[in-house]
Length: 493
Image 1 (cartoon, helix red, strand yellow):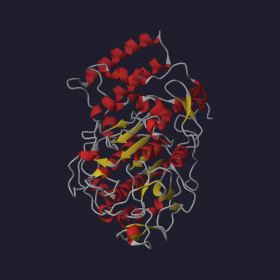
Image 2 (image 1 turned 30 degrees about the horizontal axis):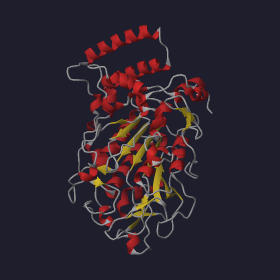
Image 3 (image 1 turned 180 degrees about the vertical axis):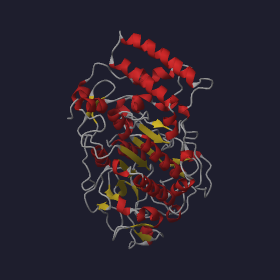
Image 4 (image 1 turned 45 degrees about the vertical axis):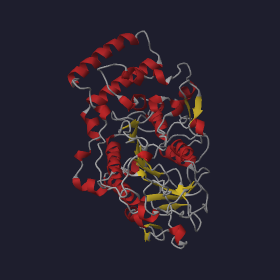
């Protein structure tokens, strides 16, 4: 265990009640800060790892870290692997569909027709074609994939997301929240479930969701066009960074100064961990509201029209572009959240059930908001990171909770299939131009060692230099493991 972390594991004197976290105190201070779902505890506390690094003399990164930041391309709903990264051109049409198979920049490796942009830069990817686990349930599989820990239906909110663990350990950087979700408002359902949680770490480490509260969280009841346009303009500027109406920066700074004077006096009487946390979080919240640099990180208008066009003027394009801006500005863990949408319905869960208004799966994949648009945005992200020399220290993870059934169903869709799927890594010390594992002739079962959500989590932690066997105190000081099983995927690094 790295120097300094034993103390974190043992601390149990001050229980971390989520109702008593500093963000709750901030929210109650009318006319000072309006933070909404900011979850300031998540974002603005120098945390366990930061203190451990100070102790060890390395305040910049965890020991042996290959990456400084993570972009987590979260495709909740179950992306079809056969139509994207693992086509089966020799299988019957009821399995392969009607999409063509295309060559990639890797000799002998082929992708599905919609993945033309990623195919050209396949030599930058580390592709895993043997992603597999034992559940076909959206909720259980998503909670498992977001945390790396298996849960029951009664434990859906119990385990922290990977980003929350990173936030707890690494703390903020350059004034930006540690764990940012863009937009962080998509929900499986119905009824809608918010699985972007910090679990037993406490509400203080929940993600900062730039989209705020979803206007229509239950995507399934929206009126959806038969073929909605992929072109869209999203306002991804967090409303929580706007000061209260009538509260100028001068007045805000004056109130901050007064608060700091009061806290200085109080600190002479009370030096508990929780009071220190409150002070640090308050200062961090004020920085968010008053820092032009932080606000600028969320401003896509500063990008060139040419680059915006490269990503695509789509929801997934804008979200990927914002992720790059945030990482470039210092964000540690950015989730690009794309899976459930009031305009497009349940994007990846393509059963073609009654009411979904979807075409045949092969036609669906060609749409600009489906695989084709996602391919464009993800490829642009990787090229952009590389051009800016950010890819080497940024781990990109493309992840979904499971694949889709090999056989196309009677209505032209594919159903849930936890037994086999495809994901990829890029950058962050991963082995570029490498394919790990494979599946049988129908894409139904891995033909090599299967790798599950816990292994993906272990691989992310490995990239960041976080030991897999690390334990962290929960809200009540009890040491709990960040992973219970799983190992780094062989061949990724």
